[in-house]
Length: 203
Figure 1 (cartoon, rainbow, N blue to C red):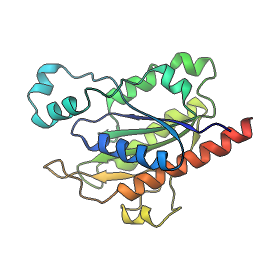
Figure 2: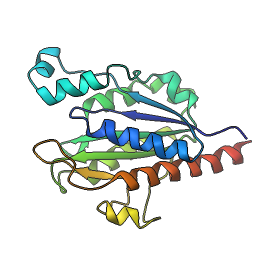
Figure 3: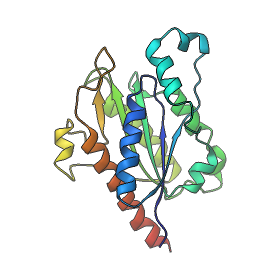
């Protein structure tokens, strides 16, 4: 059986979700997956981005990261999404990307994709779980198979204990408050493992 193909699709304004995506890529590669790290299209005007040093730095840091396309979703056996929370739901940039996949969905090409998700917010109760739920709701419409970390490894507790997906709190300086690297890598490996089972079952 060929290796699991994993697309890690992120949106990042301050760099947090880009870092989560990179850790997920490391974990998935350790599990033997072929990985693409991809960003979604930015929607904010350049004038707004230029007025925020952190945002501008992230745009600069991710300038060579490919923009995710429908072809990437079709290619992937599994997808990990990473997005900050915006009022308890996913960022509009991520929502637009998902909304643009209607053609794939209509042709049945999102069925049985194994998906998982990660998020960040400025406080622990700032909508982190709700954001993951909002993304998973869309995935139910896709006919995808949702692979959450649950409590499948003690590292989940060490990262705050979110069973729906790794979530991290970010302070006013843009620094992660929680140590989530191990939890992200575990989540990525679990996603790859479940995708391997599905891929084998479909052959």
